[in-house]
Length: 192
Image (cartoon, rainbow, N blue to C red):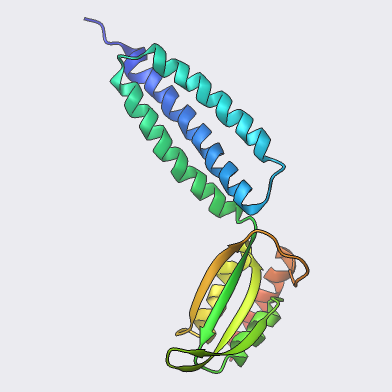
């Protein structure tokens, strides 16, 4: 009895790879829609559906091949995973960060302004008394640097991060300019 290499090995591998690719495209397409990057969405959708149709045809041709079904599900799961990883690495869009603190926030605000983030500060009343609420909108690629500044200056502060679809006006420095400012801030902190 001959082993069916195509049905048990080749076809499932093709299906996993194809599903991985089309679901990754689909995940990125959905993220682009949510972030307002609509120019690439139709192109991504075209290739996503084209790959999907080709793969569905192969699965339907091999109806009795349970490895094809497992490959279909596995490719779908992997495609979602890789799509989210790629989306995180692209770091597209902007996010609003709300920081709520009971402590004096001057050092944090100064650090945020040195990183060229626009800052809005409000006095508010929290569950345990008066608080400062600090708002800023940052490019997603800058979020880690801001979280580092919060950890250094306000380690007990509560903060939340939310995606922003669109914003007008504001203070946004280029990545190169921001990196040089961050290097300067790190050198200054080490010198203290």
